[in-house]
Image 1 (cartoon, rainbow, N blue to C red):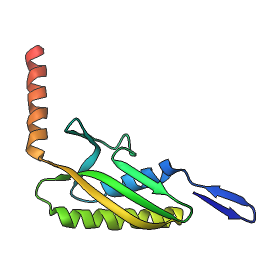
Image 2 (cartoon, helix red, strand yellow; image 1 turned 90 degrees about the vertical axis):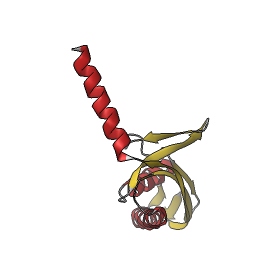
Image 3 (cartoon, rainbow, N blue to C red; image 1 turned 180 degrees about the vertical axis):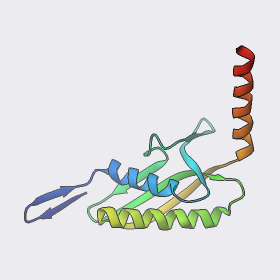
Length: 132
């Protein structure tokens, strides 16, 4: 994105918009994480380290469109969480970049069950104790 002004041009990289969208999406309650998309039928859940994963952005001169690939926590209403994601991402991009967001597509790639993660952590701790 480039804005021409009297003093020069302002350029905002697509990756910047992707990071803003990724952060805004993960701030919403009920979002377990971003998904890197389905590769070979497996959705990989990614943490906050790589904020552009699970985000696809198309940026024009004045407008942008965003595709988000998310994993929702079990027990939350998927439509409600998706609407909140759309609202939060639109607000963040428009306020930080001045771009008009014309489209935000939320792709729910999976559901995260908290019990599974706790069981995995418990199993890892038990294995560590056995090794010692």
